[in-house]
Length: 386
Image (tube, rainbow, N blue to C red; front, side, top):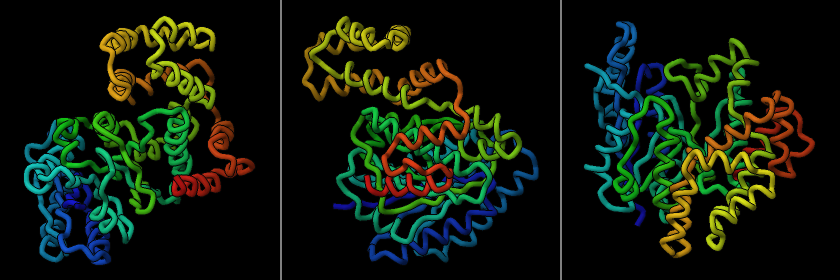
């Protein structure tokens, strides 16, 4: 069975974009042959402290939603959380919508809850692909492409793809794209994980970090989300924030990114091979790290109390799959990034040309390509092959 589809869209001052997003979903619904259209849940929200002009923009967003509600080929559920507003921004808005979907529509284990943003469009096959998706593990991510007409956008998407590819090459179980507008989850995994996290930023990263511990995350390379490349200061992370600051000081904005080197990812790969080897006790692991000149990693893991957790897993004499899961829980996506930050701080931040040379290390087909946009186009193609 393919299951139902619920799409949750948080909205904050989206009047300029929301109609295009709703119509894009409508085109995808009409292009499909599905009998049951998706439930689309719009959660209009804002902070509790907000200017009158921004309140007016949100009232415009609500007005557009209500005017479109009965013209769309799918049910549109509108939630107004503008008064008094939310404490935890987009993460809380996503949670409100996803919890509602879980309680009212996504009741069977294989039903799907999808996240989208109100300034995105989707490909024509988006709805049919999601409707017919099955056997995807606990969650999935959808292939994405930003428009490249914004200064700095090429570099930022290259950064996203570089991090994902190098994590995958290192053997990390957490090598998925943490992009809020292109993720989905099974109803079962959503409930088992405790649902979306309440955070004003990085809620997508932390949510997928939880979901991955319940099962695989599949990447759908044959359907697309087209996220916005607009500038924004609403949160202090992410695409919009980077583009806003890049347009003002490109050097400073680029240097603010945490970009591990290929050597850092190689160290991470060596660590994975050591800590997931159930036949090796902790002291053997530490000796191996020392022999590989990775003593700084050992010190970091000592500070993070990782070895205590691994020792406990070894003492329990677990089956291999259960031991593997315990190591994933002890050294998860967040711990991986913390370690990569430690490693990246041991060398100078890369210049854009050096970063582009690092990207060429991802795939032999990238060698000899030096122009950033050409590299990105080719890197997108490699994503479609995997």
